[in-house]
Length: 494
Image (cartoon, rainbow, N blue to C red; front, side, top):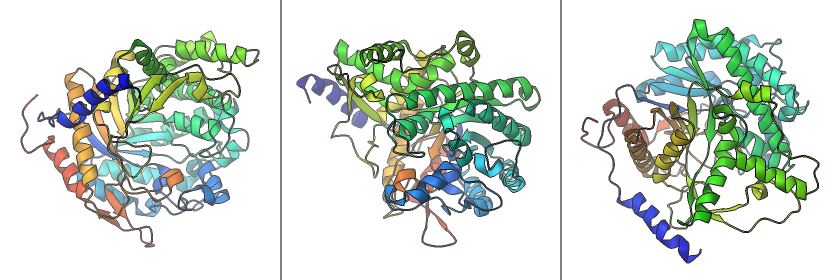
């Protein structure tokens, strides 16, 4: 690390360790909740007419690629234990529960004209159970589990996916919309496209760097807009709900106060968060992406930019397709300017052209990518608010992992306290944050890490066929936060 990074880094760490926990009450209408996702908890992968999805296919074909060689075939068995899960939520006292619908459970081939009634019944029952217990559902239409039949046709690289997603969204709004006030189209589309099509590190495992991830995002944004307009034109008047998207990102902190590193950090923010948010909030891709990718594409010998172009009609159609914004936040990175990457094999990383790293002094978790940086959430929320016109924001995921060796998960208690303290400060800064969602309700299938990393408030015994849930120490702390709306023993009015 260069000497120019030391002073800013010391200041950052000072913020991390010196700040007191906020003693201000959260607003009365602030929503506390927790989250899961269909493939990670439901199990019942081939029961009651459910179709195969890309994660079923990928984990069955490549068990060696999952850290513990497991899959989500049974997972937490929430398909059969949803009432027990809702009872846990009721005991926590949450105002909302974020869940996702498995596309292949309700439409096994991905075609909305071929529905699976048991799948529809499952989600009807789950949503009604939540309503009966005064818990607001927040429903994600797509949390990474594309029907395999659509993947066989090209998945997110096939332009027809836009209409297929629109049809699926219409089905969900029609069947479930009376019980849902908060909809999300996509969860973390960056992971769908970057890990699924750029790096080939997650389902569907396609590695076509610098090309397919851009095509994937292009279709995701068009599909998001399609769903938003369907809701706006056909369902909003009777259902009165809201629809947005969930975007994830680290906070990218400049490695120094130099102009070069400040610019590099902003470039990284635009290549990650702006890749999705700019078209939805401001129209089109970020200028820095358009410029850099076009320049590098030309030097690489491409006849046009590898970043697809929206038509003027598409720009107008996508812009403004938000009622609120979901933000997933876990950790931070440092960013420095660096020399321009060589012109050879194209990639998204080279297109960004910056150096990303973490401080070895930041506290670690059980996940190699997750350093504990509470100060980052305040900075991220302020940047999002200032960059995108002060939208209404809900934190749709935030949490930390441990190895499951103890129910005394002090790392999670401290994490929630310190991140929520910085979130409360962001509210004082003027950011319109109306809710917080802890990831996750319970330990579950953590994608390529299998069951080796534990993010849950509740421990799940995956060796027991009954999958019993056991509260960790963080449960009592989170319950206290929700009931008192306070992070410490005594709070003051804001």
